[in-house]
Length: 536
Image: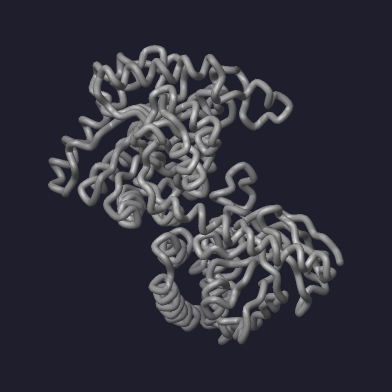
């Protein structure tokens, strides 16, 4: 019996047999090649790959369909395909050209150590390029036919791996590498499949066919468990099933405190993938959509690309309101050319400050958002607003975009609600100024507001004592914002990591807040805590 430690990708506890996934190395022909023939073969392979991705999207839940859409779109990306075409023109075979470019793009994203969301896109690129190269090399794309449920183990799992196995045959997932935010992990969570990552290569050496206890909630697995460990796991599995049934029962209950106050639960999301997960978990809308994460490094997405991203989020939200935060470069660090050292750091030109220094890019985003708002309920908030000058300048861009869209004759929503994300103490202290100038809603961002109020980075463990999102100072600032919103009769939401903590959420409730936005996985836990609380 041996215990291996990893990181939770999808919580849960299962007992079963391991089936290891091996990826044989690709071997490419040496040529010579005829560029025109290779180009034609590549075009045909791409058509086949996109058909296969469409089929998988058709079998996927709404929260997963965007993963396959992204992969399909990568095969139409002009920059990506131009590089493949250049390699073919230089005499490289289509399969090897696709593999080379795919690996280079994936490595570029994987190198973004401070951006987990962009890193997970690297796996998508490897996944789709591997699909095309397999088609070109006449290799199978479905790797495993299982006749009984197993726990899959691999160095890294691709999103499409989970759709190459018959439904219900995957008990759990164990990877030597990978991330808990990967698209495979997102799919696992949506399917309630327990999984852990980063257990190391040692586990993979001789795990195939052996029994394992996978305790993904604790981030560990036990290979060849003894009788006592097996019995303990079986007992825990039964208890966890009972607890999950109890928590899932919250879905059917009204959002109302013990003393009768109604509240709203929203979700913080990155894109269509987790918007769908949030809706299935009981969210009544999206309180924060981080728009920066759709941007590829070094590539500013055009208006049409952004429009498709926002409309796909609205489609998955199924009529519920989606609140989009405009670009917050410097915090999200998603584009290679958007982060320029100190000037765009946490205390520099990030958020609306950065946007107002790049008006053409800001106008493209606002136009895309106003066009998307014609397809469903959408709100827009500006981050890092410090004073009324920031707000007025941003709304001048909005007015400009209204005129331009009218001149172009395209469909758009002229009356999109615009609001402020209050993450700077100066803005909280003057909240009434924004309502006087037409602000339609407030969102209190506890992550940034806490660190700016207490002069401490939320990422600095040694100073964690000072990072207190429910401190007396924070409560005073929050109370001021709630009061200003009440006087102006506009909605106010509180969001951030702190809101996913039941103790904090209950304290915010008693400060007068009735709208809470958090990670999708915290929704049911916080719902239970608020239902058990007295608002007064």
